[in-house]
Length: 379
Image (cartoon, rainbow, N blue to C red; front, side, top):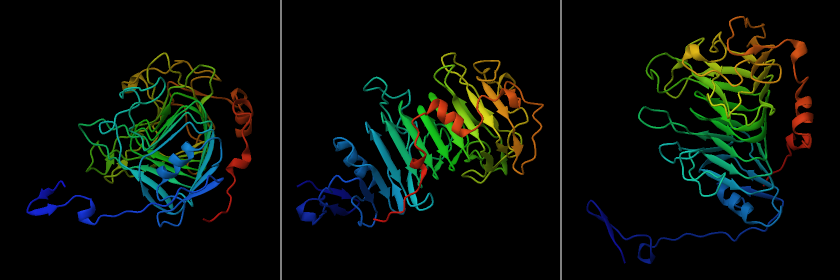
């Protein structure tokens, strides 16, 4: 038997002589609802164990994975599921955390693709690929990586790498950089999204945000010991085509908060968006009736004045480009948008949509509002 030594102590491995033991539970039956619980009272101890079980099933036997209260320290992967609901007991109760980032575990373009359209790496905390519909409710996903000099700091909490659909309700997503990477279609409702550099981005078709808090965090790389640090960028749209709706924000609150080292964002130093500067991507972002804290620059959108590229299209119209309507401060007072650059402040008659229902009717016609309802259930 192999033996390992550390200092003067002998380690006898984990075999019979070391009296090392573990036990496993029999696999549960494939039923509509399965539970994950850290105390052993559920069907699985880990979320990934439950997801592996779901992915191994034929058809749609498992419809819902419920996550009991607790902190689950694990990265997650989900692939090839037609429809699944993952629901916690509250964003403060069911918490998923882990540390992952580009220099540690490269992906999203720098990894080596195994199949066309699939990431060969995995810098995100939760990677979702090729799903039909995924519903996330009442949970939090926090990428614990703290930005620092000398490494590539991209660190998504959620990478939705799918042409399918994602619905998020009453959940929290936090990272410092690239918090949400979105493809396909998604709808975020009454949730928290926090980060500080391009923390909402993606090659999407539709990403609709309604009644969320979009929280810009202080930057732990820039002047980490100072009271204030310069802000950054919230969005980088890479929408797949000119006629795709892109990123739409209706009735959200854009706030600021101290970062991991405690510094706050200098007022007027955060931009709503910057462009990737590539003609293959479209900068379709529409803001309707949102509230903005004073960390947002009077200019609004970043461009050549900030050493950033012009958006595509360079001149926004009523249905394309960077657009804004009805913006106020956090107290509901109308914002002065006269200093805005690179985007378009719309008039009421130019609005392409009347409300959220109009957006869904046009771009997600099979949406089922009952998916947003919470069902009381205990394991």
